[in-house]
Length: 223
Image 1 (cartoon, helix red, strand yellow):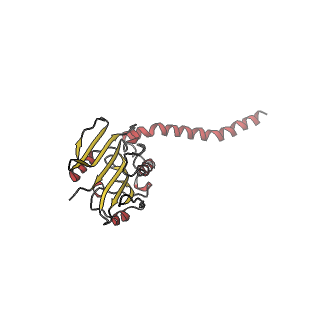
Image 2 (tube, rainbow, N blue to C red):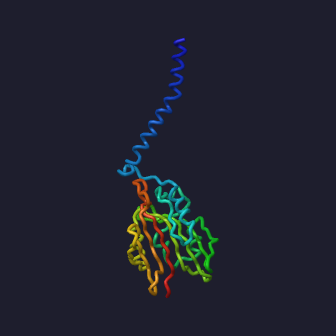
Image 3 (cartoon, rainbow, N blue to C red):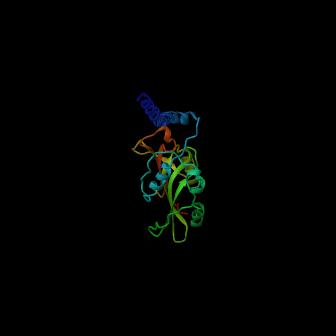
């Protein structure tokens, strides 16, 4: 009988011990991974959360809705989407052919008010000053770009703001809401285009690429 009990002890120990050890390893990894990410020992991995947020951001055409500010920006190897430079994504020279040739997936049935819309997922790069979200381009019957609407996130809005000020003449405006940074382009005393930047409801160290929610609407200035 003792030998039988001893055999059962070894059998149970052999079956359970690997799971216990692997569980300890998983716990250890869960504790140390954020610390390694912050200290720079390991590059932050890019889950699909930002890609999902980009799709959610495109659900409202021209609205002020923002995607969920969670996750980090996806790397090129984890997404079918390609990187498009900020300077290339927001310019009035864009054509429908350029859009169709630069994105693997384009939503096109977005006609509104004599305009044809093309919505795509926009990821400008992997640094905190890049943006990730969805942008919709609206063209008139002459296939001329008339409007751009972007909703997404960024870890640091400085580069976006500097680009819009230098390239499209945006200017800072102050609002009653201290959590909102507002930049606008005025024409004939009216707001023609506006950029709204708002701190995400929850900012985490592991969400360095989505600290700010960005809503940008640009209308083509009169010539």
